[in-house]
Length: 175
Image 1 (cartoon, one colour):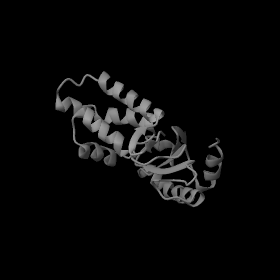
Image 2 (cartoon, rainbow, N blue to C red; image 1 turned 90 degrees about the vertical axis):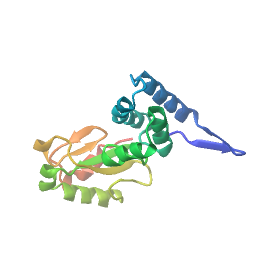
Image 3 (spheres, rainbow, N blue to C red; image 1 turned 135 degrees about the vertical axis):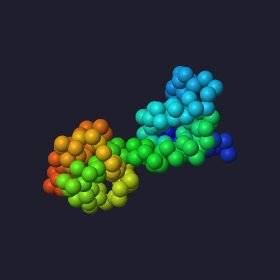
Image 4 (cartoon, rainbow, N blue to C red; image 1 turned 30 degrees about the vertical axis):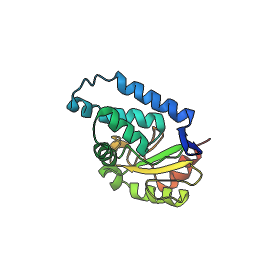
């Protein structure tokens, strides 16, 4: 991700982050918002999805930017981010590992899979490994109950996961 660089008290975003902000701004400008506060709120989740796809996560400066552009409060933006487990305000690793903990997955052993991932990665839920390679998260339902327990890595679904299969899943994460 882009970084903020400061020299003699003058701060600027790196060109990558600046181009990401420009892309987000262009996206928001393309929305049919009019001057309707309700309509603007209606595009919040969609805009946050776009922002997260651009930045990988939703840092406070991106949240503030979205709030300002949509004319809503930062508290409302953060409320949506904290409510929906898909959104994150922390950087995530190159491999986002999310374990479904919905009812079917939980009953079939998702908790043991999470415990094995925690052990192997040395992180807790919602954390990224120190090398920035792996993020471990849990989601409430991925909608693949027939394959429970399910783990998703960067959009790829692994079904019928067990603690014994965790190492194979990690081996699939190649740089």
